[in-house]
Length: 249
Image 1 (cartoon, rainbow, N blue to C red):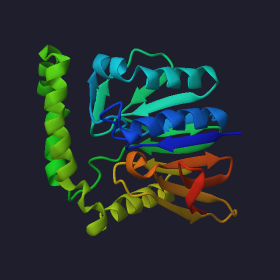
Image 2 (cartoon, rainbow, N blue to C red; image 1 turned 135 degrees about the vertical axis):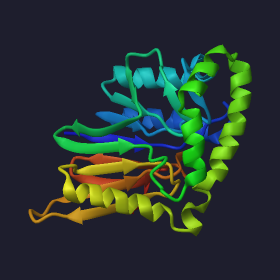
Image 3 (cartoon, rainbow, N blue to C red; image 1 turned 90 degrees about the vertical axis):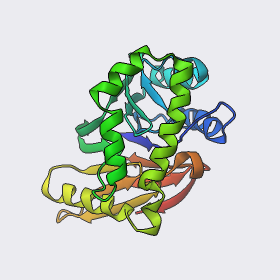
Image 4 (tube, rainbow, N blue to C red; image 1 turned 180 degrees about the vertical axis):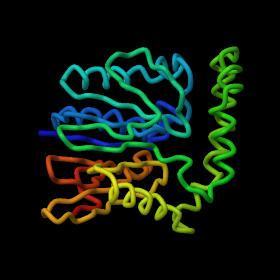
């Protein structure tokens, strides 16, 4: 049976970060739990683009940990976020994509996506996304040395952080993601929808006539709060990485 972990938004920017140390420990925990699958829903790093050589070298211990996890039998998926996108990691043990709109995990249909750009009110970020995901940006980064590119990335990171995510709680914008997911669940054969991006952990469900449920999970901010999602057979919950549950159904 499936035991699937979902995690996002560690926002690692240094090997001295608490988020970095926490994620290294989290990998070991996932391995200890004999997870069948691990989905990393973007923004693991403050910036990752292209071949990722700079990040791979800087965080070699993290990627070594993921490789060991894969060798132990866990399938690893890495989705693009708004800080890490369009990368091509040179590892055959990590499957990366912008989203998995309908992926089957042990007979359970899942939609897994970072979630950036879904909020129609977030016009500043949508404009920024059109630039950094555009063909011109993809072209010029090929000619920028890594040490310069990652300094520029700090500027993009700051703009992204200030483009609407800070308003998620104050203006209840995170509720839009919940509503979007629940509507998606109601008219498709999806069983679970998982987002990150809002930094607000969330868990909702739809009751089915056969006594079963469909779930929406938002993994929250792992870097700051240690939150993550789990699908353990038919049990779905959000945990905090101190082995305590934050929310449960």
